[in-house]
Image (cartoon, rainbow, N blue to C red):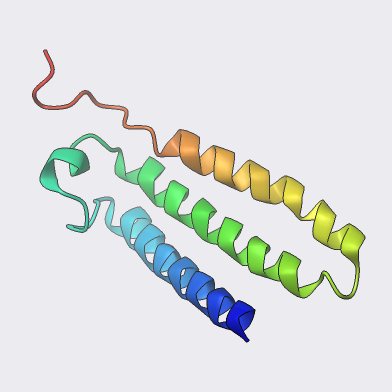
Length: 103
């Protein structure tokens, strides 16, 4: 029961990431969820794709837990795209612009 509740929280967070990522990609601006100092350091397109990749990672994580009963090999094969999504999202999340206080 607790695993199902945890999966619900993960899927809710993934859905929020999809909404934020889609908003950033369509509006080409980062929402006011981040503080102003951090918002100025990110490129909107990279940030939007990072949010979508984090959502894909979360969906694959829950899917891997669900298919573990049917096919452990398939669940193990889902680890490769999960690692790829989280590494790519981390790379896209690196700020590309210097901080405003840096010279």
